[in-house]
Image 1 (tube, rainbow, N blue to C red):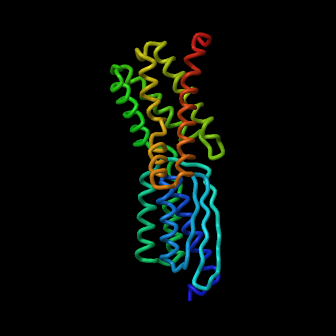
Image 2: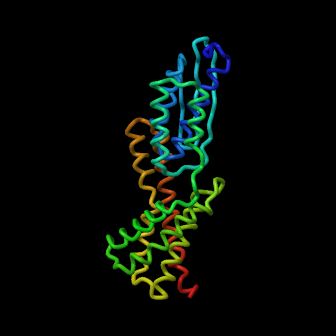
Image 3: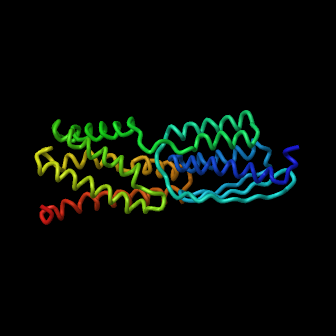
Amino acid sequence: MQKTDERYSEKVLSLALDLGKNMVKCGAEMNRVEETVIRIGYAYGMEKTEVFSIISVIYATVIDKDNRTQSQLRRIRSMSVNFEKLEKLNDLSRRICKNKPDLDEARQELESICVPGKKFNIAVCLGYMLASASFAVFFGGNLLDAAASMPIAAMIYLMQSFIKTVGASRLFFTALESAVAGLAALVFVHFGFGNNADIIMIGDIMLLIPGLMLINSLREMLCGDMMSGLLRMLESVLLAMAIAVGFALPILFWDFIV
């Protein structure tokens, strides 16, 4: 039978960690990820499951009914916010715990969820544009400022979709896209497409602010995950600083550019 297979606990742990890793990459909180790994372990008959996770690593150990121990680690090198994929992963974890499907079947479904989607999504791009325009108007800009912020927002989305790579420093790339957006706002106003460069910049800055990361860090600290919470808060502060530096550089050097 499957449960006497020596590789059974290894397959269970591998499935649980891969699911947890993809949840983290989609923006899930660490305590939810740990709970998911533990529940999957118990669902498939593991006697004990222990998990340790921070924002860049998940490490777990399971002990089966024959007292065999398996330990595995997953390194997380990139994160984003993808609630659609996260919901599918949460649904899969719930069905695994409830129905206990065959491991190979669960693995196939996980892989189908994690297939990379299209790099360019017109709906997401339009969302970026509408959000930046709305923020520009909200913070006191006029319709021309809102219109000017929209192509810059599309530029930010295209940079995130086609230029950003897994190996790139997130801080460096954030500063780079902020600098490009700030320079574009100044150029637009210089040529009469927009009246207030600062308002246009604010509209586009709001697309880059790591608000969800900061909220998750506070939630994790309140739930007792102090290390994950502090690391996530530190990363959000550093990203905010990178955004500020990126937008400040074009303003400081604009007089030398024109």
